[in-house]
Amino acid sequence: MFKKSIVSLIAFFLLISPVSNTLANSSESQKIIDKRDFEASLDIDYKQSIDVRGEIYEIYKNEQTDGTVKYEAHSPEGDVEKFILKENVLYDEKGEVLATINEELVPAEDENDSSTSLNSNGDIGVMAYYDSETSPYPSADYSKYKDTYLGNLQLEKNIKNFTAGALAVIIGLVAPIVGAAMSAILIAEAWENDINAFAIFYKKVEWHHKSLGMLAKQFFVTMYWDPNRKSQAGPTKVYYSTFA
Image (tube, rainbow, N blue to C red):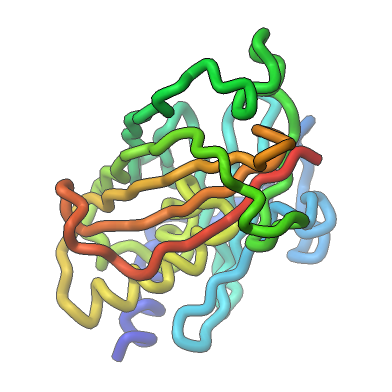
């Protein structure tokens, strides 16, 4: 029943969102003639997979020079959904809003802690980081608390009416790498417990390496169904962001 529902949702989405053969890479537009060409045009780090009860959805991310981010979600049947993220708002291929990210920062008590801020002129913001589920350093080395982020993903429709690919993209905006796994949990819980949420709330706690500071970060991400963050939606996930 679950699998048939997901397939039906994807089929409906595709009927109202025709798939174009033209994509854009990070520097210029190019025509992609098949899936292998699309994969070759992206950095492998931008590809994720989501397993929804045995069905694998592949999620691709492509950063643009204008500051926007393009996503593609490939279903097990080969269908494709396209999305674009601009200023914390995710749009579908037709330009309709799917979700909006609202986030509040609860900063560390000691904002002058040199161990968590290696650069005072802001240049660190443009440095490249590699996101991963594993760390090149022991987990215990991430002992410098940095910040806590409280936010919500405001959905423009009921969570049960999103396809697996769309939800994986939405959750991935908050939790790169582990977002796909978290979305699989949310999909299962929403269907099994008849949850009709129009928003997903989260808490993200950031820790820095004891000696490398912000060059090596650890994030704990927890999703909730309610704004008071009492009803937890699945287990807390951990991912790492390391300066490449």
